[in-house]
Image 1: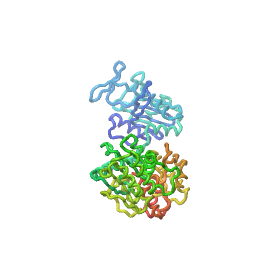
Image 2: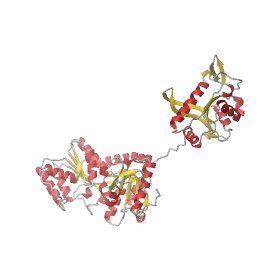
Image 3: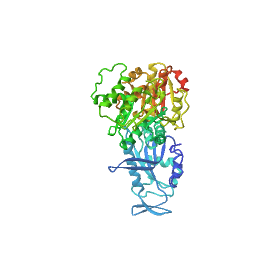
Image 4: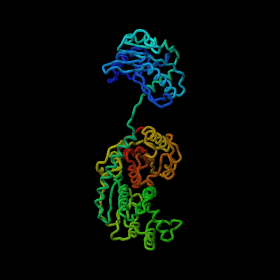
Length: 539
């Protein structure tokens, strides 16, 4: 039996093609029969569509293009007409068959590199009529297949083969390449990139819900917003700064972490009303602009009380003033920084002071307590992480799960015990996320608990992808330590952990694992999986 493409007759096949399909099924192997073939090629110097009702392929006989025409046939003064229930219509079946044959050969030659010369013939099949003799010079009897040939398909096709002298061998690789072009095997997968897009679309709605909730505190002058990782603190801080700026407020938007500060500064680079950046960067800028001496060599302890006192002086002698102070990562700020920043307010009584904080992320100030009296508000909906990621993050401190967010892919854990194991695991994960999952390199970040691990990875190539430091990244996969990436996020994060023994270890794991919006992969020793309640994943 011939190999049919498709294997079964489609429901909507035309009446004229149905009997031909059934007849061609009787051809012996290795004939391959393709029904309703369409392609794109250049015809008469222009890009155009090509199609054929049937294409026959044989390793020893090349290609045969068959056009099917239903109804009764009339030839009048050399013009062809078909008559059916709808009336009589002009046709030119042989011109169509010839044109399709040449266009198909050209298409295959262009589409398949190194394709050898392919012999091709054509014929026209009228399954509803019986003809006798040649119908015209272009339609000799052997190329006109009719109702009677439905009972003798092997003989009829052999006659076409002999008429066109189709006796040139086609190798197996070429047969498969032609088959792939005429009847491609294609699986359209729902990739990780699709999952990420779905998750992030739903998260936009959750973030808007959070923004509206915090907007209800607009009348308070001192506000302290608590929220676990992923509850949208940075997003809401940016939103509040943007809205205050639109109302003409002079705003300071600051944080602890330098990479996050740089991102905030870039976000508001064109906004004259917002001064954004990390506290360390802004403090140095304000002190120098006030004409005060900033030390070239930073003495030990300078970034505690001394810088606060120097800043207060800078705000006193300088001309910088703000109407609103917005602090992200407040849990990492020294008490003296809060007092110094209050000094930047043009009107301390009426100025706005808004702090976002998460005590679980206090990796620089243990046992942090807010140093200001303020109206407190708690964010309880995780609008960054999926529910699956949030559940794993909550296990670090035994927290209750946040309010329902959005579902996404399950986190993965890959056990490793050595640096070589990390390298191997990373190759597999990057191949899965980028090469197979269709995530872009912009979507993925590698986060390390130890600086030595980051330094080891920078400059490597893994799964064909360069690994680059966040500050120097061009097109590769970004890698950064967890503490430097605090406050930032990515669609997918590969978090490399080494231990969960000390409070700082747990804080870093909590921060790192909460960075991805949709996909979390953890690489580390087996005991970490037990602590997090995660099964092993083979990637």
